Length: 603
Ligand SMILES: Cc1cc2nc3c(=O)[nH]c(=O)nc-3n(C[C@H](O)[C@H](O)[C@H](O)COP(=O)(O)OP(=O)(O)OC[C@H]3O[C@@H](n4cnc5c(N)ncnc54)[C@H](O)[C@@H]3O)c2cc1C
Image 1 (tube, helix red, strand yellow):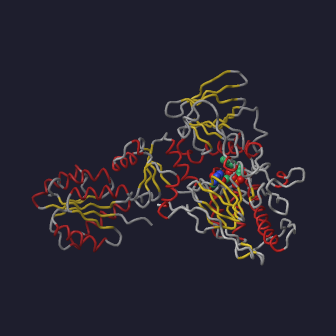
Image 2 (cartoon, rainbow, N blue to C red; image 1 turned 90 degrees about the horizontal axis):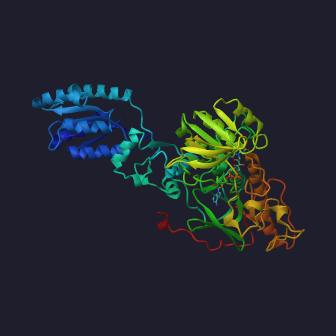
Image 3 (cartoon, rainbow, N blue to C red; image 1 turned 30 degrees about the vertical axis):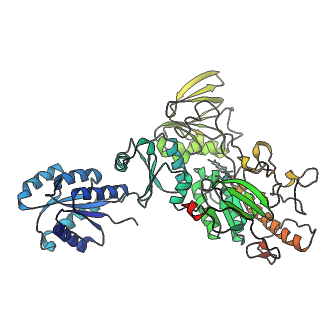
C-alpha cells in the first residue's frame, strides 16, 4: 500500500491555518495526509517534494490574501504539478470577484467564505463532494522505481536491463517524449549529464547509479551472512540455481554469487517452450523467480550483484575473490557462470551498443521498439524466440543469418512459429558489415551473398544473438581450460590415466569436477555441455552429489587413509561423517583468513 493521498491547506495567518487543519484532520485524517503551509513559498516546496516522491494530491485549500503571492497565483502554479487536484479558495467577502474570475483562470472548484463554521454545514458537504469526485477519476501513481533518461542512452539501457532481469517493476520516463519525465527533470533541477536518474519508492533518487549501488538501494543482498560456507556457487543461471536448491535442501550451507541477475541467460528468454513440465511454456523471468524462491526457501543465500574475479585454494578451503575486494571461503565451489553473447565485430557496433544495438535484451527493449523495424542477427533458438516476441510489438522483424537456412541451428517448432508470423522476415546468406548512425542506430550496411551486393537498410534497433563465449579469463591459471575458455572436467582433466598436476586427493576427479579438487563445474560453461536449460539444471543437481562425495572423501581420508571414495549414487544427507552442514568431524577446520569489507565500506 502506498502513502495516503494528501490534502494541502495554505494560509499565512497561523490561527486560520490551525483551524482549517484541525477541521480537515477531524473528518479526513484517516484517509488523507493533511499538510499545512504558512506561506505560498512553503506550500510550493511541499508540493514539489510530493511530486518528486510521486505522491498524490487530492485537494488544495488556499487563502486568497497572502503576502508575495495570491491564492489564485499559487493555484495557477500548483495546477502544473497536480493537474487533477481539486481546488478551493478561502476568501473574505471583499475577494469574491477574484474568486469568481479564478473559476475560469485556474479552474477553481469552489470558493469558501471565512469563517466556515459550523464545518458540518459549510465545509464538509462541499469537500466531501469534491473528494468523491477526485476519487472517481483517481489513478494511483506507479509505486515502483522510476528511471528518467534519454531514449538512446546506453546507461539508461544498462539500468533498464538490470531492473528487468532482477524482476524489479519500474517505469521508464523519456525526458524528451514524456511530459511526466520533463516535469520530473525540471523539478529535480537536473542537468543532462545527471541522467539517467533513478527515483526509488522511498522518495530518494540517484544519478547514473552503478549496478552495485542499484542493488544496494533496492535491498538486494550484497554481503554474505556467514564467514564460510559448505558450497559457494558462482552464477545464478539454471545450473547454479538448481545446485542451490539441491545443496540447500540437503543441508549444505550454500551461497550463490551472481554478477547481474538470477536466471542467467535463461532469464533473457521471452518464452521457454521445451522445458519439461511446462506445456504452455514459461518466460525465463518466471523460471528464475520460481527457482530463486525455491532455493531461498531451503536456506540458500543469494548475493547479487556480486562479481567473482578470482579463485584460490587455501588449505581445505576454496576462496572466491569478489570484485569489491571481499572474499568467500567454502569447502567446495561450483562454477556455473554460463556463457555470454559474443560481440558483433563490425564498425559502429561498439559505439552504438545500448543506443540501438543490443546484446540479447529483447525483453528490456521490446516496448521501446513499438511499431518500428528491427533486426536480429543470429540463427539459434534464442534469436528465434526474440523474433517471435518482438514481432508482437515491432512493425517488422528481420532475422539475418550468414548461412543458407536455420534447420541446423534452430528448433523446428520455432522455425514453424516464425514462418507463421507475418511480420517476421528471414534473410539468409546475409552478413552485417556496419552499424550506422550518429548518436543512435539509424541504418545497417549488409552484404547479400546471393547477389553479391551491399545495401544500406534503415534500422531502428539491432538485437545480437551470436557466438557466445565462456568468459573464464578470471580462472585462467587456476583451472584447466579447453578451447574457447570452456572449463574441462572429469575424464577430460586426466592425462593418459594420470590425475591433473597438483591434484591432492586420493581419488580421480569426479565427473563434473575440474582440475582442482573441490571445484566443480556445471552448465553451459563446462566443456562439452549441451546448451540447454534442462541439461544445465541436470548438471547443477548432479554436481551437488559430487560435492557430497568430495566432503565425505575428505572425512574418510582423515579416518581411513588411502581409501578411494566413489561418487555417491543415492540421495545424500550430511550423515555422521559431517558436522551439521558438512564440516568434517575430526578436522577442526578454521576458515582461512579472508578479507571482508568493513561495515563502513558497505555504506
Ligand atoms: C534468449 C535465450 C533463450 C533461450 N531459450 C532456451 C530454451 O527455450 N530452451 C533451452 O533449453 N535453452 C534455452 N536457452 C539456452 C539456456 O538459457 C542456457 O543453456 C542456460 O541458461 C545455461 O544455464 P547456465 O546456468 O549454465 O548459465 P547461464 O544461464 O548463462 O547463467 C550464468 C550466470 O552466471 C553469472 N556469472 C557469470 N560470470 C560470473 C562471475 N564471474 N561472477 C558472478 N556471476 C557470474 C551470469 O551473470 C549468469 O547469470 C536460451 C538462451 C537465451 C539467451
